[in-house]
Image 1 (cartoon, rainbow, N blue to C red):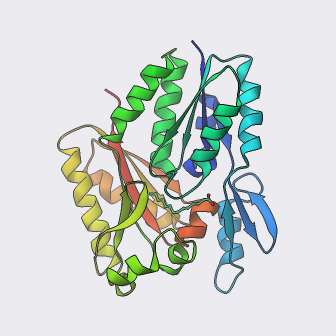
Image 2 (image 1 turned 135 degrees about the vertical axis):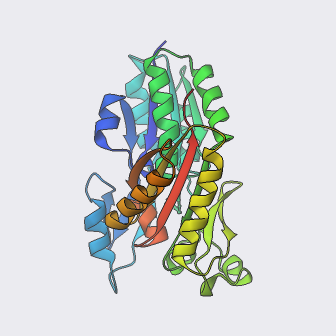
Image 3 (image 1 turned 90 degrees about the horizontal axis):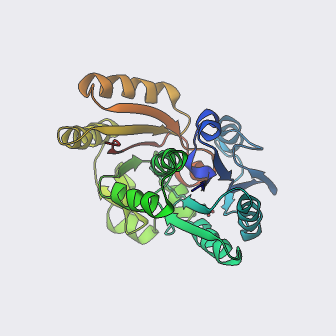
Length: 281
Ligand code: MYR
């Protein structure tokens, strides 16, 4: 049984993992000043943040065209028995819906779409697990069951430096931000029912990072974890946080990842996140 694993660019998986595990990545697009770029294909994260910093142009993002999914799915038919396509939350992007639609258009073939209900490297955790299992010859049912099981222990918390990006992109409603009095504080954000909502209002970035680290430590006492620190163009701060977290929690496996152009459009430079999931037993 050979199952192909597809994801989108917002998992921000390093190319060595993509190549080693034969993962197929469909890029989302960011448009700056009328020029469309497939993220991390035509535009690196560093180039993106340089272009939009300060009074730079306002970028816009778009999901991949359905035709791109159909083209990829059709090309995978000849040497696979099934496809599992894993995407960023359907509550923040139409990408998952596009994959479902393309699956229906790919005739006489087993295509399953999985809604990660979040994004970034946490989506990547699902993709890596699915791809490892596919390499071992697991059936699509077994892989889908494992992904569903992973949801139980998957956590993701993040904070932004400036809420205007999230509000402008419509991924955190102004009403919610105002009701929560979020404009004066640095709230911790998370996903609930596929959309981004405030988790807790915390006044400073330092305290927010400490609170997230405490939640990780609590879960780490109960199960083996892998975790990812995700930064929006703050590699030094991410590295320093990793050192601090790894000293406190030597049994947790840490990875550093980043918010690339598409997610960076909605979060803004300086955002920081931490997510984790139970390690494979
Ligand atoms: C599209 O145009 O379809 C893409 C929309 C992407 C919205 C991104 C919103 C922010 C997601 C934050 C994820 C943080 C995970 C730790």
